[in-house]
Image 1: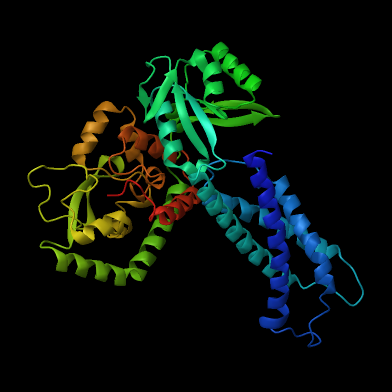
Image 2 (image 1 turned 90 degrees about the vertical axis):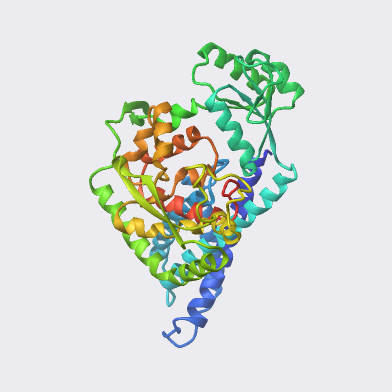
Length: 468
């Protein structure tokens, strides 16, 4: 049994147990805690609930299996997994309530409120169990247990980005052992991984390197060569995955459709950034920003006092940034560097161990607390909670000259958080990589996507590798 199958069975077993425990807790909560049980004054015989527990648990795992909750998807964010579990639980609750309605026995009916408690408690228990399983598997993979040896076939931006992501996030469960590239010499490196030969040498490489999975990261490889790669991997019992050129994949204006099961592609007519969606996004921004400003005001005062007492200079700095439609506006940040840090150099990128940072500035930048005053920019309408991070005019001029679609970032308001930053593309990471994620966000925006990015950003604030 491979790692994916083991994980699916482990999740199924933990969900079943969570459903059993959840119903026990729901029974206790309904009849012994709140609200007080009124009819007859005595809780009913728990036998019916004991018999119902395995039925409800079996129903849950069956529904989860049918709606795809147990589908093995590596690299799935915990937030996405929670969305999947919540959706599956909603369907399960409807099925269980229908079963309760059909159940008939003299002098006994199930309490519907107890099953409402059950749905909520079971969702929480499943979430905790899955988080624990993730932590356990991450610890195992950090020790090399359960890690697949991966080979990347390709060169250029797509292969470079794929190798970086696989190495940056070991939670995906892959260890990249090498790259095959026609246009590079043996011994050269892509993102720190050695080139082991040309594409046609795959047969010998997968055997000598004991490869488990092959990734093809090329958009221009001839179909007959791809078929030969597939045949070679099939003969060796190796997983094979094709990645379209990453830039084309993430910034494409093509959407999927189907007619009677036949897959079709259609070209988008521009970016869907106008109309009711814009109104919803703006209302969400204002509600969250205003609430955050009120709730975080004590933290603002503490940070301001800390900045003022530890170094000379203003508490806040105000920088020009390029916003929607190319309009320049002033962003506000807590000062994290010494006053006049750019007097001699002009605008420059911050670097690891940057000696311009103040003592509290290191912490502020590490946790992104220096960005909090931009909540005021959000209220003013200069920025959004989520969107491409705004850049300074000097850098925008440089990037626009060499990246054809860079100005597409300015079709929407810049954000306090971004899809690129949620994936740890911060600091001095190549702007080409960040642009890929920014354009993907713009072309696939939804309110749920915004919420997902905010949750990921909050969860990763302690683990960002490129925040300095």
